Amino acid sequence: MSRAPSRPLRVVIADDHPFYRRGLARSLQASGIEVAAQAPNGEAAVLAVLETVPDVVVMDLNMPRMSGLEATRRLLEQAPATRVLVLTVSADVTDLADAILAGARGYMLKDRPVQEVVEAVRTTAEGGAPISPLLAMPLLRGLRGPSGEVEIGDADLGAVEHDLLALIAGGRADHEIAEALGTTEAEAREHASSILAKLRPDRRAEAALRASGSHRA
Image 1 (cartoon, rainbow, N blue to C red):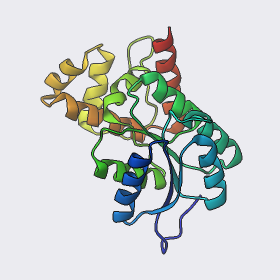
Image 2: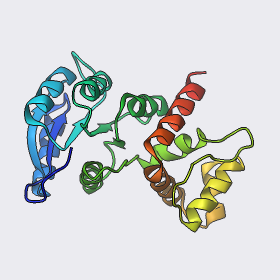
Image 3: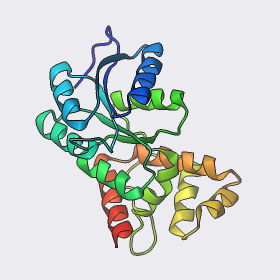
Image 4: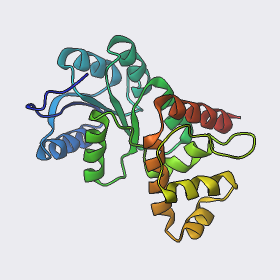
């Protein structure tokens, strides 16, 4: 699904909390993003997307009648080109993994700054895969192979990102990684998020599958 350069980016917002939904709509519109429709549940979201064909669907997870997870699955079946960005309060790695496996492109937490959410919407529209930094480290750890090495494939990484992966392979905790890199934990997690965004979709799905299995065991 490509977007003509002459028209604004269009989104559908699916969230069962009207105050949050309307506030997000105002923030997106103030940033030049058109809100094609708002939906209070997953069922309404699927209908709205099929009717309006937006560039991005901003999808909450926990909604009545049909969850955001099920709505994402339905959309990927009925409109495979749909780009879903999950926006949720859940920092559970299993929820993140399930969302990615269902077909979501990105996963952001609602406690992130509004401008960061706006940028995540733009990134998703451009084919990117924004992942909330708080959840990036556990997902990367899901790519550790039997030898401990983090298997990322052919992603083009910077020096700091390579160093971070080596530290993850060594079994270091987040605070130890930050200390070794000479940065804060928040900045280290931002680097981890950047790495995930550079991975192929199949590699992110593999990380999600492994992370999901380890957290359910």
